[in-house]
Image (cartoon, rainbow, N blue to C red; front, side, top):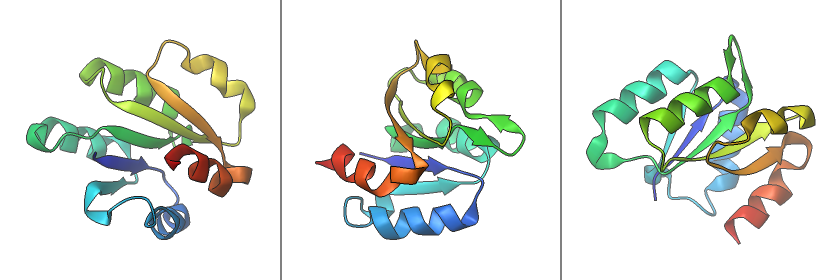
Length: 116
């Protein structure tokens, strides 16, 4: 499986790399700060398909919900795992291919449960 993280916070990228390394091979995970880079890779790397996107629900100037909708239109098989502090935004994602909402305050325990 190929994974991607889309989050605009550099510190979270580092935390995610460190913590997820016990579950994910770093060669199987791409890291993005903006959706433009993610979509360029998705369009150019058809032979190296991304299966799961860990997606911040609120990016600087972008809505994670809108990005997830675009992902769904590009490739309906891509699964989204939202990263959020906002419980109320869960309802906006109905109808999308969302595997899980991970709430940032309990990120580590929820990632553990996702991979077990």
